[in-house]
Every structure is written in C-alpha cells, then in structure tokens.
Amino acid sequence: MNKIFLYFRQSLHLIREERLFSSIYMGGTALAVAFTMVIVMAYNFRLAPVYPEVNRMRTCYLNGIVAVSRMSGQVLESASVSQMVVDKLSELESVEATGLFLNYQPDFYVQKPDGDDEPVYVRYVNDGFFKVYQFDFIEGRPFTYEEWRANQRRIVLTDALARRVFGKAEGLVGHAISIDYGNYTICGIVRAANVVSAMSYAEAYIGGSESLGYWELPWGRGSIKAFVLADDVDALREEFREMCGKLSLEFEAKGEEWEIKPKNNGFTTHQEMAMGTDFYTHDAHSNLIYLVLTFVALLIVPVVNLSGIISGRMESRLAEMGVRKAFGGSRTELLNQILAENLVLTFIGSLLGLLLAWGIVQFGGLWVLDALGFSHSTDASMEDFIPTGEMLFSPLVFVATLLFCLLINTFAAILPAWLSLKKPIVESMNQKR
Image 1 (spheres, rainbow, N blue to C red):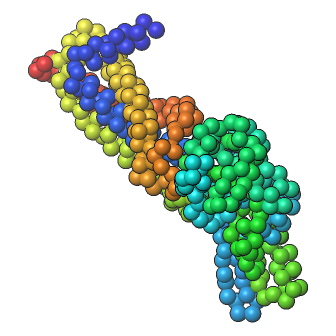
Image 2 (cartoon, rainbow, N blue to C red):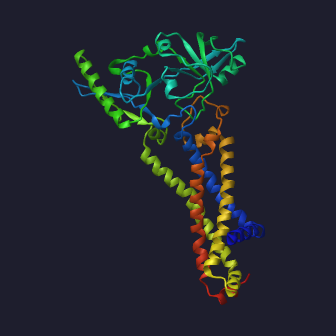
Image 3 (cartoon, rainbow, N blue to C red):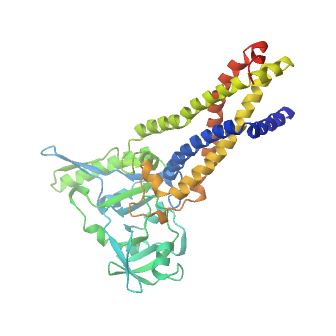
C-alpha cells in the first residue's frame, strides 16, 4: 500500500515537472476516449432501453410480407401491411402486445387558440402503441381499443406540444384540439419522447382507425408499420410463417392468385435493427465489423503515437534510471513505477475524455448524430434533442472503455520502458540528462 501511495505521489510530481509531456499524453488519451465515447453513446442511444422505448430488448419489428403469384411466379414485396394482417398478428401466442403506426406521415398543422397555425409531427397509432412503448402520463390515459376501433378521434399530446399550444401541460384532458382543421379530444398528456427514439417519437398521437382503411390494398398490403412485444423471437417467426400459410389458403379459397410469405424472416429485433446503417437497413454483421475497425483506429493509432513519445522520454531518463539501479533499485521496481505513472496519466486523460465526450454530445446534439449517420426523427430540431443522464452515462460502458484504454496504454508504455531498463548501468549513467 505504501508503494502504491508513493507511486501516486511520484506521478503527480511528474505531471508538475514535465508539463509538456504530461499534457500531450493526457490530451492524446482524452481525444481517443472522447471520440470513442461519442460513438459508444450514439450506439447506446439506439440499443439501450431509453424512454419511452424501455422494452427494446423484447421489441420486434415486422419486416413485411412477400406475395408470389401462383400463375406467373411474379414476386411482390411490401414493408407495410394492412389492418387485417395486424389483427391476425395480435392473435399469435408469442405476442404480448401489438403496436402500429401509419407508415405514411403527411404534414400536419395545429391550430392554436390565437388563430396561428404551427407545424406539428403527428403519428396515427393504436392502443397497443402505448403498451409496447411505456410513456409517462402526466395526466389522463391512452385511448382504449374500443375508442380506437370506434373512431372516437382521441389524441394524446406531449407536454412540450401542450405548452406550445395552450401554455400549460395540465388540466387539458377532455379539451378539444384542432389539427388540420379536424377536431380531436385530448385524453392524455405524456412526457415527450426523445428524438433519438425514432420509432416512438412524435408530438401528438392520434387514435382512429378510419385513416388506416384508406390504404388497404390487395394481398395484405397496406400502410401500417407493425411491431410487437415478444420474449421468444424464434417462436414468433415460426408462428408468423404459419400465419402467412393460412392467409395463402384463405386467398386461394377466394380465388386470388397470391401466395403470402414472410419478408426477410418475418421480424427484426430492435438490436438487429439498431445495428444497421439506419432503422430500415439491417446489415448488422457488416456494421459490427465497421464499428470494431473504428474503435481500433480511434484507440490503437493514438497508442502507437504515445508509444513513440514514451520511448523518447525514456531516453531522457536513462541517467536517472542508471542512478537508481546503482543504488539497488531492481528492474521490476523501476518498471512498476513507470507503469504506475502511465496509469495515472491515462486515468486522468480518460476522465477528461469523458467530460469532452459529454460536451460534444450535449452541444453537438443532432449534428453529431447526423455526422455519424444515425437515424432520428427527420422532423426534429436541435431543441428537441435532450440528452438525459441514462443516455449520457452508462457506467458499464465507461468502465469497459477505461479498462481498455488502461490496457492498451500499458502496452504502449511497457515495451520502450523495458528496452530502456535493459541497458547496462554504466551506459545509462553516461547518458545526458
């Protein structure tokens, strides 16, 4: 314990005495950690449970269906399905809840009490949308299945939109709101979702199945993007294949020529979707390789540079090392001191890198996500991006990154230090200080 304390004091003394070297070392480590953490946090936005998508580990998205003509062999695909397909999907044993939203999102305007019109991002959803995505209701409730099926024109607003339109976010349940000059009754106010929760983000959620019927097309095509909660993805995919087979038999009995099959294995998990280049491209394997190579470039390249700097510094300390060896200092003790110095510098640099990463994400916001190619709501503005504590700091992620930096920086220091300490005492003492 005394040696550890001594090494720590010597490291602090080194920082004061060799400010240029210490600044370069800590700065290089900080930049490597910062850029790595920015990428890690961006992936964390997409992968980790984030409000209101707290069920991401169990959320599966329907890829769509494929229709094959029994007569000509023609193949047609559809990423969006009809309400008929969604109803049958809800009956599957492995499905806990089924949510949907209208894949077509036109431009909407909300009519404020003062007569002004303001653009608003709206989703047409069903009651299951609020079962898959766990929204915090400030007041009121989501609309029920009966209200949705009866087209009772219920709407759930975010607190941010409520304040923009009414100047408050409470006491609005039962009030009417006009969107595109259609009147809706407010049934609930929720805490606004973050724009990085791209699948659940909106400013208003309209319940009413009349809009879905406009887009019903042959062989199960439609305008609905469906997603479910399921614990067993394999069972879900198998049940969906069986469901498609039954649909094909129903179509055949009606004299239709189309045979229905799942598109791309039926369902994509949230993790598979998030590892794609965007929320609709699922090349997770290629992107994982790209991610690993990016981390290697961000962390290994600075280490190589630091290794060169450490090697040059060790040359300047040969005389010091020679004197200490002459007075009985062992090679192991000297090596431990050098490694301890590097660990302290790496730890301080990593903390600075974490703070820098927070600043980049906090103030860079959507620009950072755009630069990294990540999806978010296209209707969002910088003001809509609000990094929360759960998004900015994941203890496990930071500890893993810190340990990795300590490991590779240790390797960067150990080789030049070991080579320098192998030199004979006389040769070391004859070196210029």
